[in-house]
Image (cartoon, rainbow, N blue to C red; front, side):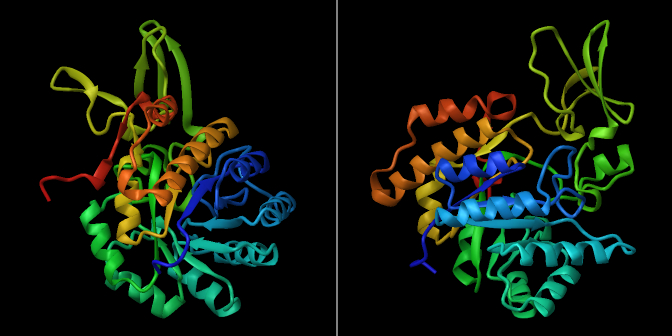
Length: 336
């Protein structure tokens, strides 16, 4: 797999965002349909069949790829909708399907044996044994690893796996097992890995109170912002709560993953692709992140030994980070 090109995989929640990603250097763009078959099921986001075909044509004409994420778990009474989504995506000639559910993987494998399949990060496969099983049973050619592994653990998986490995390089982090937020499920009654949205919009409220702007999720107070303070989209894991008379980010501070400094190391391991999170973000976000990572990847490919992160890259990305700060997340665990 070391002879394969290193790919930059970027998100798109609209046709405009897809074109922006392609124009700014993405090798592959991943998208979803306008329903709960994908894990970014927000109003006004994603693709219908017409816009998907237009996006695929635009990408293919420029030598780029399009992946469709069908990365939620079907309800017992609704599997036919997920199967129909597989058929629609294949008919549109997507380059790969990103799937989490083993029943849906089996359907895609049986009905469309020539279709390239990727295991979604929502599949939460963290060992080479698990990846070998998915490869043997469903013929997956790539897996997106969960954001819970250290760099050393990723290297160990890459050395022993029969499939290509894709890892997250930039974007929001989740403290829960990928796509299975028990906090959001408890507060709203909607499971993100079934309904396709963490903190679904119908449950979000913004209220101006006497002490500042308050954000609530199904009535649960998540945060309160003073005048002039930047307000983030309310998720329970990144809310401020009172614990022992002290109010602070009790679970996770608003911060974004940024692994630019690890890029040469990831390449040397044999990682096949870097994935950018953010299908819910604007085309302007997509443009800046894609352009920055394209420059970094090209530099690392040209001269890995002398690669250095440019200050302009960090400044551009920090402006887009949650809380205007970034972290290496689980990649850096000196105690492991």
